[in-house]
Image 1 (spheres, rainbow, N blue to C red):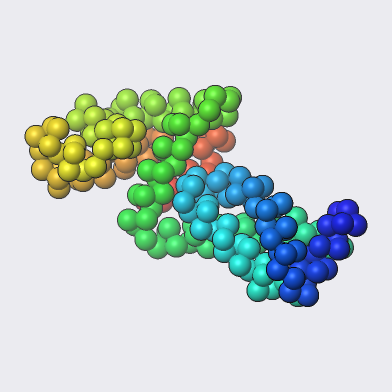
Image 2 (image 1 turned 120 degrees about the horizontal axis):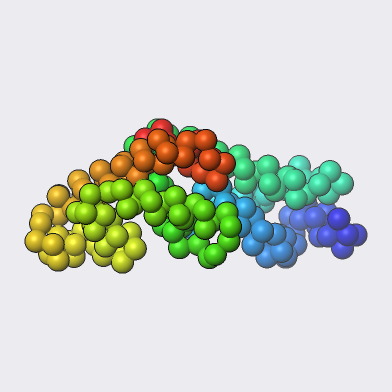
Length: 196
């Protein structure tokens, strides 16, 4: 850590708001990327990011610039992410929401070997759905149509749309769990989301 950064952290420890803002704008983009990789949801990552820096401010007096501030930040962000995952495990509705967000994130990620492989797996899982469930999933998650819009378009009830979407997400989870259980590239999904 440079002498300049050390000086900023020392001022932060004393409650200097300007120093806090400098730390926030310098480190928040990196922490946000780290959180996105962990939770696979932009909104959740943004909320956790705010919590991270709230804790930094509340516990600023405990900051030790000589012991590695980045490690300190990562430790806080990882702990808050794990708190989120524990909440997910307690809340079945939230599990489905996170599962759906993970599907969307993987499906829309830019080309890379890692994410291309994961998208291919998810594409195969989606293709394994019945035609009706696949259509409803694509309309809702990738064309961003509301349940009401889908119901009107397909001539079915809103409750049918909801039920079919829930079953589609569960079918995708089961397919990936069955066919790719040992794949490293879905370790996050296996650990966090296969407990639905």
